[in-house]
Length: 375
Image (cartoon, rainbow, N blue to C red; front, side, top):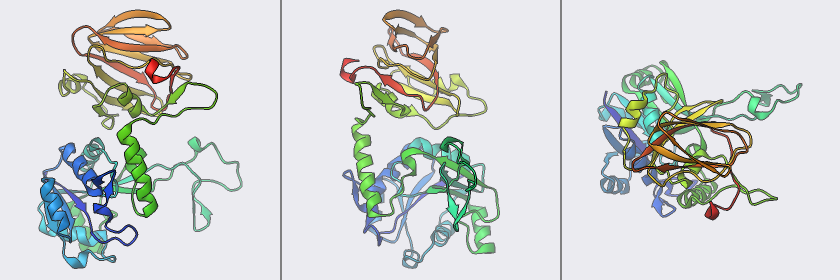
């Protein structure tokens, strides 16, 4: 199966002039998705699809290909159906994955997982989950106006398009164009949906969107934001990726989880043995299980959980486990159990990489009882 990535990028834009080449935190907006697509390492070729030659220069600088779109397919009235059909008529592929430059925070891991899913469908559409009361034509969609509204976490979810990622099998797309004159939404075929979350759902359409994206980009670069609360020095953090990054784990695969069978030995063999990394294998409403590998001297920061009993399984190496003032050495085959409210930390010991399976839940707060500098 030949898999092509297409990044559509018009130069003209009425709401945000030249937005695709406007600098976001000092970097052209389109470069974010190009780098993520290259890092995903799942495409045979990556194309920028545009009418403007400036994107040919960017494509050359970024070592990707450029497809010159006919001018009539670059107007405000030209639809995604039409310019994609034109592209497919001129570029050989079996599966086309469209990546929007206006979604700059989609990660390479998300692109890779999305592409794997696209192999199993005729059309795969990215969406995001919203649990909030919604109306259409002044009528409620997911709630009853004559009943007490449930807590938001129990409300029936709606799933708007995220749009940042779309994928089509070429043969099915062309059949839909012949039959319906459109194919963007899948027409006739196996249509599936892929849920994005967090910053990956950011889509820049307006000037306000761009300014918010600028703030997000600077915040992600600094990695310094953590929530603090009135009445104490404790820091609460339920952002799992930020917790891992602050603990020094910079290589994180967080989007290849919930496979029917996960081969742990294969995951270990496919990751380096001389640097830290993490790989999430389970992430459901009730449980999150993540493999965490760290080098001697590396570990997490002193913290506790107020609403969760955590446990770790030691797969490799030795760890120094500190809990409530006591220090123990744990090694391969041991299970470490930590009751809620108990302050704890773990540090890789010995002379080689140590690996543990950390079992918790994605939304559990890590509560740091002191300032970071003191931990």
